[in-house]
Length: 77
View 1 (tube, rainbow, N blue to C red):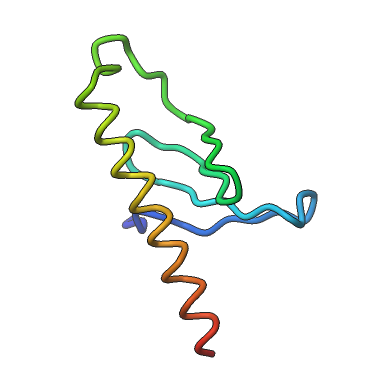
View 2: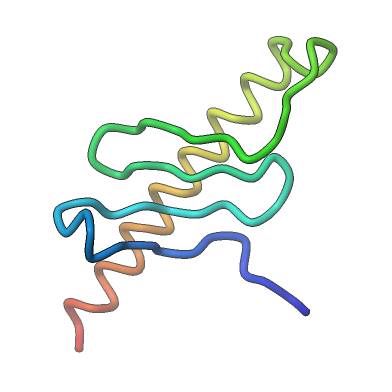
């Protein structure tokens, strides 16, 4: 099954929260409000370096851009 790279997620038990789910490695859930991240992967010490940190920063920026685009498309409806 092909999955989109990012998904918008919410939950009725947390009605004020909106999350972005990153479905590719490294999978994570990003709280849009405060940028908290819940990782679904175990990151090895070899991966936890400056290059990896830069890649994560780019993924977070992409996730937030995705969120902004999704919200803009809802406003157009």
